[in-house]
Image 1 (spheres, helix red, strand yellow):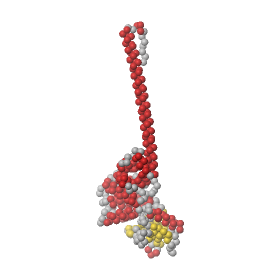
Image 2 (cartoon, helix red, strand yellow; image 1 turned 180 degrees about the horizontal axis):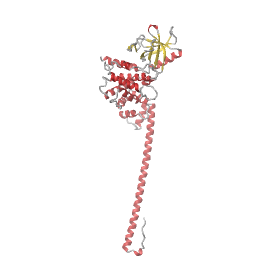
Image 3 (cartoon, rainbow, N blue to C red; image 1 turned 180 degrees about the vertical axis):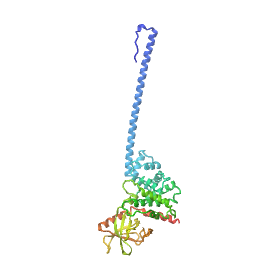
Image 4 (cartoon, rainbow, N blue to C red; image 1 turned 135 degrees about the vertical axis):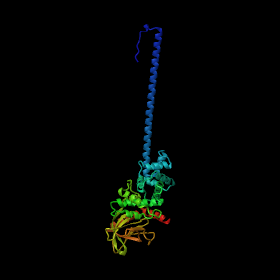
Length: 393
């Protein structure tokens, strides 16, 4: 601030006194301005310090969250424990369910493992997780697409049963009146999964027509049939677009049907001691039989739960194996196939005698069948539920 400096000799005593006051006020004003500058600088310094601390805190939180996710992917229970102990996640059922539902950075096989546990708390989380899904106004295929993308189904029968039961209950709650019961939704869901495999696996030669899908699901709606238009919409939806399955490690039910362990031509001993060519698909052991009629091959499936395969010495054929029920010899093996008219009929075999082209191929099939025994509970689950529906009528 520039001030003029008049000659003091020319100023009166009053003007001299007034000039001194102006100089004093100027000094005070400059001191106040400096104080404000210092205070502003201090505030900015505090803000910088706070932002640095906040960035550090957020970086530490993100680091701990990353560690928690990795722990979850290796051991879901320990991962959740770590996240709650570090206050990154509350122990509330709803919060954990939302965390799993969002799935950011989480392995979907690990999510399925955690949801499949039988612990009462895990069962509550499973229910809350399924409730995160909104299925209203979706057909069953659309709902299954959403559900099966959010985690991977484990391989154990009891876990699959609980998960699909919870899904069916939620779907029916969101869409009242679509099905007579949750049992109907449960059975039809598995039928759709099988249909998806049959229509889109490149190794399946005989694509099932709509009529076969209808036949598979007769009587499942509390003893009645589902509307054909409803089944047509589901069939067309799957036919036009297959399920998208999360790519983790493949140890779930749906992956079993998408990618059989083995498949190929074998010979099966049929009625009249005749050996018929058969295209066998494991681990699900769906099969296509050719008995001299390549234009209309028969198709069926064998339930593997509780079955066993072993070497078989046969005078007529070499490199044979036998599929049987080890717990009760003489008991019919649960199986079904379509007859010449396209009707589904129950199998009547107490054992299956199969011939391979070499000892190596026979041993590989035995290994694949034995592996499938403990991993594919699909048919028993569906069969039990269909019996439950039939027993009501």
